[in-house]
Length: 99
Image 1: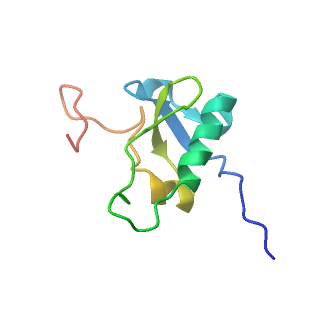
Image 2: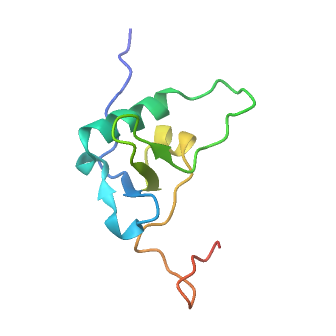
């Protein structure tokens, strides 16, 4: 029986909600927040009415809210909408192009 891959790709980046300039790689997350991220990824609904991707997640231990800014990990992309980090081009006035 094949063992399910549990490690997340190290190139996944996240930022505290509302603070994209504080972007960190997944390995830089606090342990509690990393555990909460993994729980959210594994808690994928099975096609029920609420199977939409999430905008952010909250750590179940410390309460910090995080957004995924970039990832090449299919499991992360299947569960979360990615938000551009500090390197995303903005319109004049500081607005995100999608805003």
